[in-house]
Amino acid sequence: MKRFLKYTLITLLALPLLAAAFLWGLYLTADMEPPAMTVDTAAYRVADHGGYTSCRGSFLRHNRYGLWELYTAGSPEESGAAAGALTAGLMRYQEQVFVDQIREFIPSDGYLKFLRGLIVIFNRNLGRHVPEEYRREIYARSLYCSHDFDAIGTPYERQLNYHAAHDIGHAMSQYMLVGCSSFAAWGGMSADGELVVGRNFDFYMGDDFARHKIVTFCRPQAGHPFVSIGWAGMIGVLSGMNDKGLTVTINAAKGPVPLSAATPISILAREILQHAATIGEALEIARRRDTFVSESLLVASARDGRAAIIEKTPRKTALYESGGEYLVCTNHYQSTELAGDEYNLENLARTDSPCRFARLEELTAANAPLTPQAAVAMLRDQRGEGGADIGVGNDCSVNQSIAHHSVVFRPSALKMWVSTSPWQGGAYICYDLGAVMRDPDPAAELCDAAQEIAADTAYLAHDYPRVVVYRRLGGEIRKAMREETAADAATLDRFERTNPQNFHTWKLLGEYYRSQGDDLRAAQCFDKALQSGIPRTDEREAVERLKSECKP
Image (tube, rainbow, N blue to C red):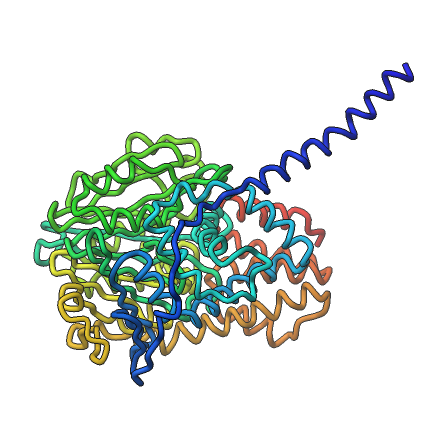
C-alpha cells in the first residue's frame, strides 16, 4: 500500500510538470514566420510639405473633416515601409490605446506576462495562415513600431497578433464588442438600378480607439487597387472597394471560441478585395482559407450587378443569395447550409441580431428605391422595430452610437461615402476611387465636396449630447459602485431622465440601488428594465435573477 501511495504521489506531481514542460516546449517552438527580408529604413525618410507628409511616392494627409488619408503603392515591403514611416506616431497612439484597454481589465503585470505566453502558444502557427505578401507588408510596417510595448512581443509579433486580436473581439460578440449591420440593394430596389451598399462597423473598443480613422488608398504590386477604412497598423480590410467595383464588408457571426490559429478574417477580406472582381472569384478565395472565427462577408460586385453573402465558419463556407433585389446582413447566418447550425440557432434565439435585421427590413421597404442619401438615413436610424422609441445607444438600434465607421458604396461608379465624427452624426464625405487612383494629388482635397451628404443636425443638436451625458453619468454610477460609495442624487435623477426608454438605464440603476441595500427601488428598476424589452436572453435572465434576489 505504501508503495502504491508513493507512486501515486509521484504521478500526481509529475503530471503538472509534464504539462508545464509541454507548454514550455510549445512556447519555445512558436514560429510567427517572419519573412526573410531586409528593409533599409534610412531610405524611407518622411518629408513634411505643410498640409501633408510624403515618403517615396506614398503620402499621408489629415483632411478638414478629421479623417486621415493614406496613399500607398509598390511592393509589399515598399508600401509597408512607407506607410510605417508615415504613420509611426499614429501606430504608437493606436497601440497605447489598445494596451490601456487591456490594462483596464488586467492591471497585473505578472498576469499580463502570463497572458502573453498563452497568446504566443495560441498563435504559435499564425504566420503560416497569413499569405507571404501580407507578412512582408506587416513586417515592413512593424519596423516603425514603438519599442515601448516589447514586453508584449516583438513589433512584428505584436502587429501580426493584433490582426488576430480583432478576430477574438468578433468571437466575443456575445460580450458586446461587435454588432455590425449592413445591406445592399440593386435593380428595382435601387433608384437608378445600380448597386447601393451600406454598413455600420460596430467594433467598439472605446472612443479613443476610433479617434484616428484612416482611409487607405492602396495600389499594390499585384492585384487590384482598392480603398479601405481602418486604423494605423491594420493592413487587413474591414470595409473596402476595389477598382473593379467589388466591395467587401465583414459582420461577426456566432461560433465556437477559436482553439487554434487560422487566417484572420480581415486578412481574408483583404485578399478578396485585392484579387477578386466577381462574387464567384471572391467565393473561390474564401473557400481556400480556414478562418479564426465565424463571419459573414457581404460582397457586392458591379460586374455581377448584385450582392451576396459569403458565410464562413472555421471549417465551412456557404454562399447566401436572397433571390430578390436586396439583402440584409446583421450577425446571423441565412444560407440553407448554415441557418440550422447550433451556434446560429442560439444566436437567433438569444441576441439582438434579429431585432436589427427586422428593423433594416422595415427601413429598406420604407426607403426603396434606395439612393446613397436614403442608405445614410438608414444607417443613422436609432428606432426599434415598428419605429418604436427605444432610447439612444440601444442594442436593437441600427445606429447605437458606437460605430468605428459607417460607409455607403456605389460600386458601379466607384464612389463611397464615409462617415465623419461623431459616429454617424457628421457629414458623409464622398471619395471617387477612380479619380483618386488616376491622380493621387496630396496637395488637393481627395474627397468630392460637391457630393457630400450633410451632417445629421437633429442628432447633433439633441441625441449626441444625450449620449455623451448618459455615458458620463453611467461611468460615475459604476465608479460609485466599485468604490462602495453613494452616488449623488442629482446624478441618479439626471441619468434616469436622460435615456428612460433604454433598458440599460434601469438595469444599471437597479444594480446601483441593490449595491446600496435598497432592494425595493432595485426591484422597481429591474421591473422597468424588463418592461423596456431586453433583446439578449442572457441579459434578460440576469435581470430576472437579480430581481428575484431582491427582498423588498
